[in-house]
Length: 603
Image 1 (cartoon, rainbow, N blue to C red):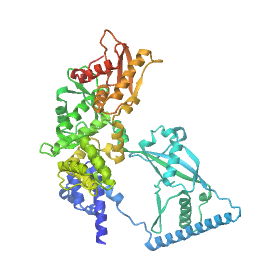
Image 2 (spheres, one colour):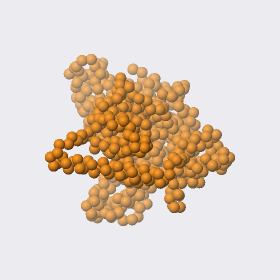
Image 3 (cartoon, rainbow, N blue to C red):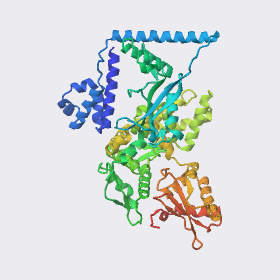
Image 4 (cartoon, helix red, strand yellow):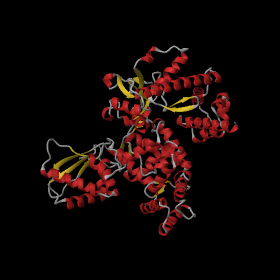
C-alpha cells in the first residue's frame, strides 16, 4: 500500500513540476516541488508563505495559477459508492453477454437456412469540431468544409479506423481551409464532447472499442441511468460522433506566436561580428514577442527575411564550431566555458530564430533537441541508438552498423570487434564488445554522451526557450521535432522538386539548356556543396523555402552573371554564355568559394 501511494505522489509531483516549467518558473524551483513531493493536496493545504519562502514561488501570479491547476486536477468523489458501481458494472456485463448470445444464436439460425436480416454497418452522423489552442471547440459549418455528414461505418470499425474515415470525409486530398490533417491532432469525441477511448472499461476489464460494442454499451448505460427506460434517440439508425481536429505542435505554435509579435527598430550588425553581437542581444529576453529586421553594415540589402536567414545561419554555424562537439551531429561541449548563462542565451536565440525564420539548427543532435523541447522521458532505446550513429563520424557509424548486423547473426568478426572497441573506447568504454552486449553498450554510451553529460545544459536551454516563446513548445511532441528535422534536411531530390521556372509561356532552347545545367549541378553536388548552394540562394543551409523560382536574362559580354535574390529565393540565370555544363560548374564553384560573393548588393 505504501509503495502505491509513493508512486502516485511522485506522478502528481512530476505533473506539478511540468506545469511550473510551462508557465515560466525556473528549473531549480520546479525541481524543488518534485523533490519535496508536493502533490495536488499538499499544495492546496500549503500557505502562501510556505509556497513563497520555503519553495521559492515568489510571484503571486504563479502561486494563483498553481492553486487553480491543482484544484482542477485534484480527485473528487462522484457520490457513488463502490458497491453501487460494482453492481452497475455487473448488470452491464450480464446484459452485454445476453446480447452476444442472442447474436450468436441469430447467426447459427441463419446458417441452418432461416432467413435473418443482419446489417454489418451503422449510419453515423459525423461532425467536425475545431479548436485552436486555448480556445473552445467550435462547430465547422458546411461552407467551410464541415457540416453534418451521414456515413455508413462498419460495426467492427475501431476508433482509429473511424478517425481515418472521418479524415477522408472532411480532409479531401488531406487538405481543408484550416490546413492539412497532418498539421493537426485529430481525435474522436462523443456528443458530450468527451474523448472516446480506444478501449472501454467494463467490470475492471478493458474491452477494445468497436462501433457496434460502443453503441450497445451506450444504450445499456442510459437504460441504467433512466431506471430501465431507453432513450428513443438510441433506437434510431444514426448516431452522432463529433470529430475534433485540434491544431497543436511546433508548426501551429509558431503560427500562433507570429500573430502576436510587435515590430521593433532594426538591429545593425557587422558580418565579421554577427555571433558576438547576437550573444550580447540574447543575454536578456527583451526581444521576446518581437519581430526584428537586421541591417548588415556596409551591405546594400533590405531585410525581407533573406537577411535574417543569412545572419542566423552564420550564427549557428559559428556557435556549433565554438561551443558544441560531435561528428555529424552535435551536443554542447562539457567545459568551464559552457556556462548556465550561455546555455540560456542559446535557448533564447534558438526559439526566436525558429519563430522568425523557421530555421532550426538541425546539426544539433535530435536526441538533445527532443530532451530540451519535449523531455528525456520521451526518448526510447532506438532513439538513442539512431542519434548516436548520427553523432559519430561517417566511418565510425559504418563500423558500428556493421557490428550490429553481425551481432544479429550471432557472431562478431574479430576485425569488426577490434574496430568497434577502438571507437567505444573514445567514450570511456573498456568492456569488450560481443554479439550479446554490443547493442546495449551503444545505447548506454549514447544516453551518457547525448543526455546525461549535458543534462544541465538541457535544462538551461529549455529555460531560455520558455522565456522567449513558451507557447511555441507547449504542445510539442517528439514526432513534431522529428518531422521538422526531416522537413529541413536538404537532399538533391528535395531541392530539385523546389526549382520552378518563372516565365510566361514555354522555355526557349537556351533557357532550357542553362536550367538543365543547374539541375545537373544539384544532382551532382555532395552534401557540403548542396548546403552551400542552398544557403547562397535562400540564406539558409536548410529547406525553409517552399519553392525556388528561376528567371533568365541575356548575358552582356563574355562573362556570365549568376544572380540570386535571397529574400524571394529566386535564381536569375544568364542565357547563352556558358560553353557547356563543365563551364557552368566551374564558374558556380568559383562563386560559392569566393567570400565576396556572399555579401548583399542591390540588383
